[in-house]
Image (cartoon, rainbow, N blue to C red; front, side, top):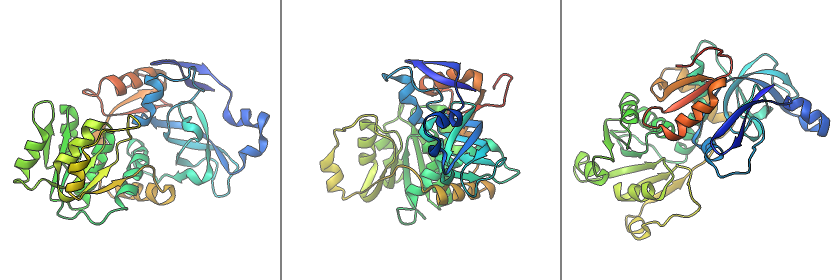
Amino acid sequence: MKAGQVIAQEQIEIVEAERPDLALVKTNPEGLKDMVLVRTVNAAICGSDHPLFKGPANYPAPPGVSLHESIGVIEKSWSNGCREGDLVLALPSGSSAMAEYFLGFGDSVTPLPDGLPQEQLLMAQPLGTVICCLRKLAHFFDAEVAVVGQGPMGLLFTTMMRNLGAALIIGIDQYDNRLVAAQEMGATHTVNTRHTDPAEAVAEITEGRMADVVIEVVGVEETFNMGVKLARHKARFIDFGVPKTARFTVDMLELFRKNLQLTTSVGPDIRNDFKSAMRLIGEGRVDLAPMISHKLPFARVQEGFEMATKRKGECIKIVIDFEERGLGR
């Protein structure tokens, strides 16, 4: 099979690799129990895939690593309840979906409904992680929300806030293309941090009240502390962005004196949250098309990663099409 392999920092090659089920048969045949072999149809580049590409890391990486948001067809099944031929949303073992085939566990597979756009159904995986986070908290009806970061995950929070009845949704980012998408997906106001002080803007929009829900979806010290400044007394503060470093210097005194409710969240409840995400997409309650900016064939996966990591002002979410042989848009 063909697989993408990160052979050096910011360098991917398409290589020939052994199909993963055949490789596992040679080393540990019992390891196939409860697993499925999936033929990849579409996959999307996630922010958590960036670090391996950007480096530094131990190169070369294993073939197929790193993509994990994926849709495919079950080619073989060693798991009860998973049928060969089904089109599914599947989490690959070891984030190994940058390949024509990957192995996944049967309990990570969710069948896809018919008649819906695959690119949006692919977004059920990241949307499921957002739903998992929001289920931890009380209602958001009539809330005044600031979402710091309008990349793919921030946009998903923005559209969910609209669904959950927030009164104000302030999308905050430094790229205009992402702020345009934020407006299309439910933001009532947007703030470009390159041109405007976000604290002053939020104070003006809320008439001095500041946000009673702040959602940080970037994962750096600067935006974490920005979120603290945007919050009103007793606000809910969701720290969702994957931290880019192990430690932050936090304005702890302001966070403490504001009596903020801090919530962190990572990952979904696969069985429940992916199905909930698909239902929202299927019912038309969320339109995720504005966040899907590019679709490229597998042969151009190198370009896809370069765009995702270096050209955020031009792209938002990039889908890699493993069945497309022509040029992507």
